[in-house]
Length: 232
Image 1 (cartoon, rainbow, N blue to C red):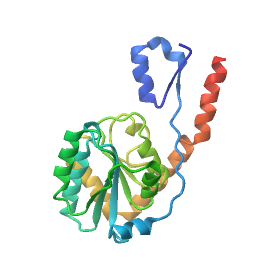
Image 2 (cartoon, helix red, strand yellow):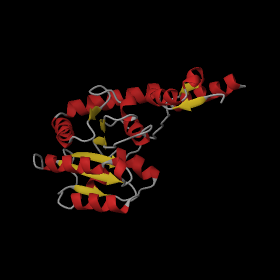
Image 3 (tube, rainbow, N blue to C red):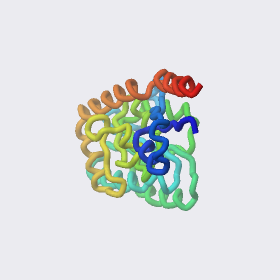
C-alpha cells in the first residue's frame, strides 16, 4: 500500500500493531467539523417548558448497545433526586429494538426526559443551541463526530474515557472524562456542571478553542491534499 490515513494516534497504534511495516506510511489526519451558528435557544426551550435557569443535558446517539445510553439514564435518575432544575434530551434512531425497549423502560420514571426520535442533521445542530451540556456515554468510539460538533457549538462535554473520546478530550481541560461503567462517577460530573455555571463556560470555551485549532476543515483538506501529492 502507498499509505494509510487514520483519524487519531490510538488508531495509528492499532494499525502498527497489525502491520509494523507501515510505520512510515501512516498519516494521522484529524476529522474536521464545521457547525453553522444557530439561534432558537428560547424557542425550543419554551416549547418544552424549560426555564432559563434550568440545565439541559443532551445525548445524540442511535439506540443500540454500544452507545451505552443506560449509563446516562441511570446517572440522570440520580441527578433528579438532587435537583428539580435538570432535563435530559435524547435524539437518535432506534437501531436495536431490544436495546430501545431497555432504554424506554429506564426512562419511563424520569420526570424531565424527552426523546425526540430520529432527527435530520440540521435539526440536531440547531438543538445544540438550546442545551447546556453534551453527553457521550459510549462503550467505544472511532472519531466521535457528535462530540466534535458539540464542542464546535461551544458546549461543555461529559464523555466516557474510551478511545476516540479521549483523543479529543483532555479531562478537566476540554471536557470531563468518566468511566464507561461507573454511574456514580457520571452522576458526580453532572452535578458538578449543574452547580457551577462558570465551570460549564470554561470547559465550553476550551472545547471550542481545541476544535477550531485541531479539527478545522481547511487543515483536513490540506493534509489530504499533501497525502496525494506525496504519493504522486
